Length: 305
Image 1 (cartoon, rainbow, N blue to C red):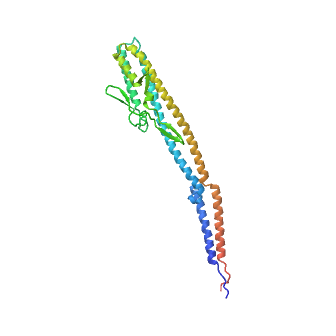
Image 2 (image 1 turned 120 degrees about the vertical axis):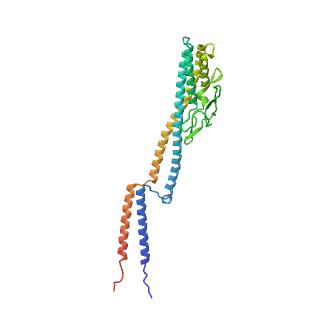
Image 3 (image 1 turned 30 degrees about the vertical axis):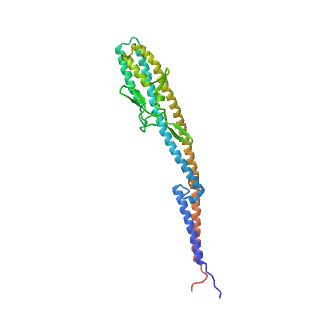
C-alpha cells in the first residue's frame, strides 16, 4: 500500500521559527535605536565587547588620574598662595629692618617696629602650618602632623619629614605634592643653620633693646632676611613649575578622554541611520513571511465535500 506523506507540521514549525527569528531581530534593532548601544550582551559581538571592556578600564584609570591631578593642582595652588604671602611678609620685614636701622628712629619708634615684626612672625608661623583644602598640612611632607611647633621660649622646630609624596597623574608619571617646610623656611647663614622664624625673632628682640646697637643689629639682619626671601622664592619657582606641569597633563587628560569616548562610540554606539534601514528591511521580511505563511497554510489538495 502506498502512503502520501504530509509535511504540514514541519512547514508550520519552520515558518513559525522564521517569524520568531525576525521578531527577535526587530526587537534587537529597536532596543539598539532606543538605547543607542549596539552591543547589549558580550555574545552579540565578542571582539567588540572585549575592546569595550579594555576601554572601560582605561577610562576608569583616566578618571582616577584626572581626580588626582585636580587635587594635586589645588594643593600646589594653595602652597603657592601661602608662599606668595610669606614672600610679601618677608619683604615687609625687610622694609621694617631698614627703618629700624635708621639712626633717627628713637626707642619708641623701634618698639613700634618690633611689635609689627612680632605680628608678622605670628603670621609666618600660621602660614607655615597652613592646611590644604583637604585639611592636610601643606609643608609637613607626608607626616600629616603640623609642620612647625613652638616651645615655651619661642623656638620654632620642624615636626614633619622630608618626603613630599608623589601623586600619579598619568601613565608612568608622578608629580610631587608640594615642598617640605625646610625648603621654604630654612637656610644656612654664613655656614650656620638658620630660619625665617629665627631671623624675625632675633630682629624683634634686637629692636627692643636686646642688642647694644639696635640700629646696627637691624642692618645686619638684612642679610638673613634676604636669604629667607631667596629661599622662599626658590620654593615658589619649584611649585610654579609643578603647577604648569599639572596644567599640561590635565590638557592631555582631556584629549585622551575625548579620544577614548570616540573609540567607545565607534565600537559600541548604534548607527541610527543603518539601524533604521535594517529595521525596515526586517519588518518587510516579517510581513512577507506572515503573508506567505497565511496564504500557503490555507491551501489544500482536496475539495471540501
